[in-house]
Length: 354
Ligand code: AFP
Image (tube, rainbow, N blue to C red):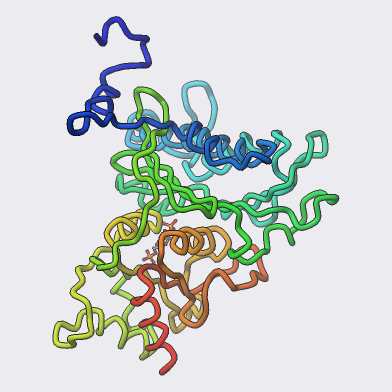
């Protein structure tokens, strides 16, 4: 009975314990347990613990974003709160949390954040680790004020030269070199989805337990896509090839064209997550005055390309795989097409005709 169980083991968990069918019990796995079980026998735990750190920071950001609607009541960003401290913007908060949790653990050699101009060095007083972390602390932040889902994206590389302290070269690696990537979606519920190159796995945060529980094991893109996602308002700015592709997506008369519905949130993690579950394509192409589009290669496109590859899909800049692009700058942008392989390749074929 609930009353006789420890506090944390509350009602929210009971539905997970209900038998499925006659005999099978649902298996409950926390993210910690799952990461640990996936770790190779030879591992020293450095990488495993880095993933735990990210799961911890995800909970902290979730706690803060869940209170975003209270800002009007408790004070605006830029205001001074009751303790005399300035209120922080959520993306700045998320950025600082990630750095604070990860800079002293001895697991990283360097970090790079979408929020900062330069790479983030590990202070000399702390031990240096073997991994480099890239992240977009809170993507889609313009959606916070209207209570629309937002997300954190991250990627983990191995440092190139383990003898040196972190350098820019450690983060300017093609996404094909990622050893892990993932995102945290702050939506109707908070989810952490990640891959270490052995499938894509999703965990949902149980708020009462304070634990991420395995909810989506081995996520695969459905073969039949359901959605296309693009900001249609920019149609006039696209090349003729991209315009033709966008019209093809809508073309009910072309027997080759899939029957898709349109969905666009304007928050990449949310658009990506929905399309991962339902199938489809998200694209943010080049525009006349933005030849590289808007999406950042290092913090958004690369990690999501790694995930979609693991889920059976494909990501391209319209000409080549995102996984193969050698980054030249920390804040480089790229045109971005991601989703079911046949749809992304179709976009490439239209672009070749430009
Ligand atoms: P913000 O962080 O400025 O809201 O940008 C979010 C984003 O980089 C990505 O999450 C969206 O897919 C894309 O921009 C939306 O851009 P548009 O508003 O131009 O469609």
